Structures are given as C-alpha cells and as structure tokens.
Amino acid sequence: MALPPGPTRLPERRVAIWHDEGLAETFDSIAGKLRAQGIDVVHGPARFDAAVPTPPWLATVGAMLVSSRFRVEPALLDTATKLAGIVCASIGTENIDIDRATQRGVLIGHGATPENVISMAEATLLLILMLLYAPLASMQVMRNERERPRPSARWARTLSGKTVGLVGFGRIGRAVAQRLRAFDCRILVAAHARLDISVDLPGIEMASLDEVLRRSDVLSLHTTVRAGEPPVIDARALALMPPHACLVNTARGAAVDEAALARALASRRLAAAALDTFVVEPLPADSPLRRSEHVILTPHLVGHTREMANSFEEAALHNLLNLLEGRPPRHWKNPEGESAWRARWSSTSAISK
Image 1 (cartoon, rainbow, N blue to C red):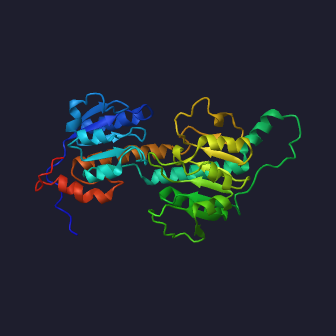
Image 2: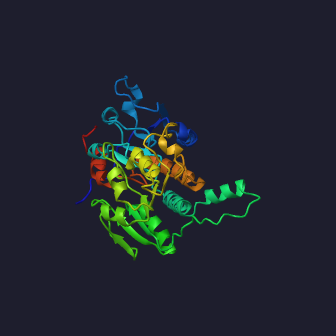
Image 3: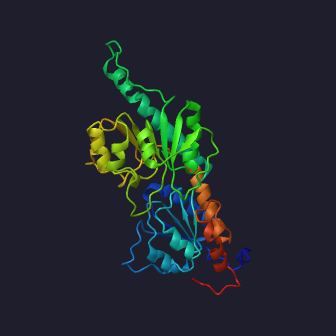
C-alpha cells in the first residue's frame, strides 16, 4: 500500500527536554547543539503530574527528549497536540505507551545503536564469567592471606561446555549468543512469540521458558517488561532452576522478583546472581540483596561504556533533528506508525491532533 506523501507541514521547531539528573550532562550538551541550530529548547521537571496545570509550552513542542525513568503519561500525549515524536535517550521504551503514541501518529526514537548492543553484550559476558570464576574471591584471598600458602579450595568453573539460557532474543540477546559460541556453550533461547525467533546462528535451540529454566547452568535475561506485567523470574521460576545455576539480569529490574531471589540465594536454592538493574533504583539500602554474599550488584552502569554514551548523544540528536525536519528517527521503535505520522504531517491532511 502506497504511503501518503512526505510531510510538507513541518512540526514546530521546539523541543522539550524532561529533566534526568543522571543524564544532565548529556541532555545539556544536546540542548546546546539544538539551540545552535536555531531550535527552541524548553525544560520540564523529572516527573509529569497531570494534576498540576500543564505549562503552556507543552501544546507547542514538536519533539521531546526523555530518559527511560521518565514515564510519558497518557495525559501528556493528549496535551502535547503538536508532538511529532518522542526520543528516548537509551534503548528502553517501556516508559511510553507505544500503542497510544502510534495511534496518535507520534513516532518513538531510541538509542538502539551498535555501540549499545556491543557494550551490553560484552558486559553480560563479563558478569557470567565473574559468577563462574569468582575473581573477587581470589582477590580477597590475596589481600587477607599474604603470608599463607594459597588455599586448596577450587571454586572457579569453566564456561566452556555449560548450557546458557537466554530469555529474550533481540539485538543484545543475539549479540550475547554470538559471543558465547566462542566458549563452546550450549545455548537455549526462550523468546516471546511476537518476536522474530528465526535463528541464523547454528547450535542455538529454541525452547519453552520452563525448559530453559530447568536446563540452564547460567540464565541471562534480555527481555522487556511492560508496566503491570509480572516478573519473568518469580519464586516458581527460581524453583525450576538447578541449585548450581547462576542468574544474570542486565535487562529490566522488573523482570525479577527481588524478594524471591534473595530467599533463593539465602537458602542456597540458587548458587549466585549478578544484577545491574532493579525495580527501584538505586537499590534500597535495606534490600536483602545487599547483604547476600552470593550476588554481584552494579548500579545500572556495568555496560555503560564511553562509546555507548557518545553514541546515545549522537543518536538522540539525529533522532530529534529528523523529527523536526519531517523525517522518521534514525533509530525508532514503532515503524508501524509511519503511515499515521505521515498523514498527520502532510499539508493535504486536516488532522491537527
């Protein structure tokens, strides 16, 4: 089916940037570059509150820049009537109602850059190796046992020959699978039916989630979790995993029932875990996970390389400029919304909302 003509009535050259303390430097840099091109930039608070009178500029912005921690409420989409697109600084877009945005002809750009995929795949492999080889334990021995012979205990395990389960098989999951092949691993994949689960890597086996849980020596999560969905790894899932198994989560904090995981680690029902993302960030000080000796915790930062950060800024800037110039973002989440978007930003259309 032929698409409507490309947009000739361009969006307003005004961008709203919603504050995120962790990305302040990046967002300030993007704002400066936008202003240098004559684009008006306005700043919103870290949280949108529909109960508070909306700022008058909200109805005039052509594009928005947000972080994955900023929830784009339906009321915001309804108020921003001239919005052509929303750009997420990173790859995650669960903070946006994609279906509602698509219906309104609002495109969603994000940071699905090669640098992001590579960084997270390498970081995932790093955590897997750390769980199996436990180098921190070796370092502790070196610090505390300087004058004693090295211990005879052997706690390290090889990755070679292990069965690694991947839950989710998007860009990052595939990149992890590619790297695991060099370690002669057996790779199992559990993926949602709505994903493209065609396998172009030999030696990878598709299986149900329960089968992956039962058979994996290492389980690595690469799945998204939408608001309101239950965790993928709950008490039932943990009970299916072998006691010697390890869990890695670099995907979404909501994918894991943290209380159930803490209990499984404390009872030695599960050998170890490595978590880089949590339901509440930063992880609360009273979380039992902080007291566990069998978990590696990193503050949603383990794969955030310099190369990734640079690529996020470049991608966000290009995505915003494309939207304001009547082109789809370079990296975007909802290409199925292109037809509605083009109809909305066409001089032949009477649609203004």
